[in-house]
Amino acid sequence: MKYLKLGIVVCGALGLAGMFMTDLGAMLDRDKAGTIVMLVAFGLPVVMAVMGLMKPPLQAGQAGVSLACFALELFKLRIWSMVQVIADEPTGVKLMLAGAVLGAVASAIAVLRPEGNA
Image 1 (cartoon, one colour):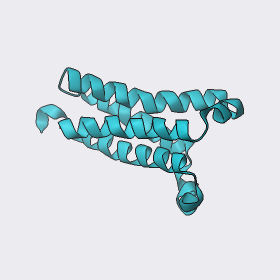
Image 2 (tube, one colour):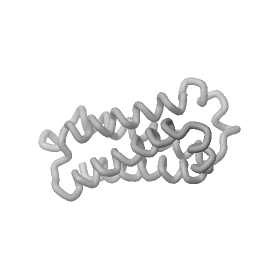
Image 3 (cartoon, helix red, strand yellow):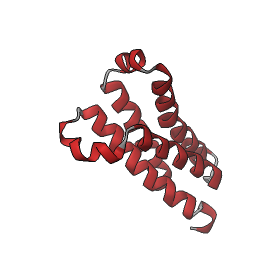
Image 4 (spheres, rainbow, N blue to C red):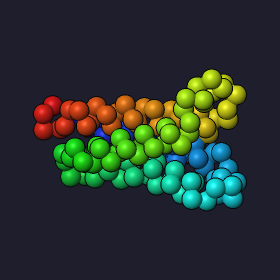
């Protein structure tokens, strides 16, 4: 389960790195509220997983918050339309998408299989 928590941390960090690589200033100028929501949605799973690492176990609620954040990111990134043009997107957007998809999978596993039941 420790690897699952580390995976959630890495996926959130990938998303944050991708946001900074895609010119965060321009994103803030275009849509300040949406950009802040994305920053929080990538940062909150990192906080939840670090809390689970520092004071085990990772609670189902913490995993649920992480899953909800990654699902929000997938919605905000419009994954259903991005899949078709992923090759044309900049590296930062690819990192955000990879972090959101992999983070959602890791969080879903953590929700479905809590640490006490492993």
